[in-house]
Image (spheres, chains in turn purple, yellow):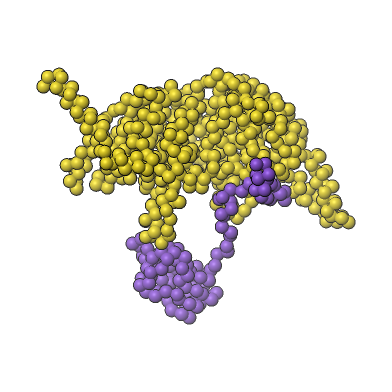
Length: 108
Length: 515
């Protein structure tokens, strides 16, 4: 029993000191931090593309409308987060997309 | 009608109402390990003490042909009774009647018994088992929920409020339990969520089972919404009985005093639990059990944020709220969840006149981007707020590490602990020797011929000088450095001497805690 618990101990570091301890499920499952990717626009919710305002090669400014994504009976204007040139449009009008799908890619 | 006829008419009416949703619905309820609403109340309360009211209340729905339907008791049972010798008010939603759905009269029954509890100044126990709002009653059903939430808030900190989730509790309904003091859940029976799996699937395209979304385990381990987890309804009822024995009837009373009992010292030796190396873990519950009456500790939120341990025990027969860092889990650090968990418990103890004993052994706050972004500043502040605000007797024992902000937050003398004791193993410092030496002696270490050796030397130097309780004791931040075997004796005296403690706070409507 004693031996078994010992082997489960992991290390965590606080202020340069390594502590032996058990980890929680929540701690183990935490998602690593990712820098925000400004050159792609992802669907924040599943829905349907109702309108596309731009085409490939367009220069857009931060704040410009890109597409209309309808979800939960609301039409959401998806806007550019940064200036750039439209490199790729991955959706068509009427297409149903799921959360997290990359809608547009930019060159910035 | 003759009297006899009238009496037999009453009996018939009662028989009809007591049938609940009928044989078929009751069979279905039992098939999944659930008792009926009335059986649950009887199982919780002391034998033959339940008195039911409003048995003949009828629902008020008029539309959708509802006026032709008879819903016995309108799907909820309310009454008063005795629990472990304590008077209580109680209600239980009856899933066999229209799925326990909440309509206007159903809610009126609940708010009526809640109002009773407030007037009588006794605990209220609510058993939730309901499909949600009775859609046929429209906005009246929503009004019913709102009336309940309002009363939950008014009763908060005045009478103990206990929620028992024994079935579905979804949508707006979850906010009544969330506003109460203690939430009990049972594996495979309790289900709580704001939006269910079907809505999540249609809106977000994400698939998840009810159990994984809002089952008993999820709320005990991940969300922290539940305080007590049981494998069966009967185990859950035993937990309720145990809890009620530790808490007072209302905020003007003290918890019932029990005959005093010594700890089980053969099993739990207070001076033999903590490893000397401050980097090595141990089970802090064993320290609590080594010093409390009969080594009996009722832990709250055992699985959630297990890096801090909270719960009730008795010392000299009196209920004490224990808060202890758990070196066994995440080295006992403070983080978003553990700060939340402890802060709420401290406020509970403060509201209900339960003295607080804090056991300290932590390296500080958990580092990490996820913690910072989750708002560890705001959540961590709750702990400072709760300790500073509390006026019940506050006694702190520093067992081992008390570093940096963690030292301050864990009921230090600066947050007005009444007594701070420290074991000789205590290390009260800005940080651990390794970290501190690296900063203070950075140049010496860098310029040394053998930096590793120099670092070791400097770490040892720092440890000798600062990693002890005597620097803090020299400033009076620690009142007594004690032999661990004297811990119980010291605590009992401190609690006794504080029994008339009164602190007057400046007049205000209320503070603004970092919710």
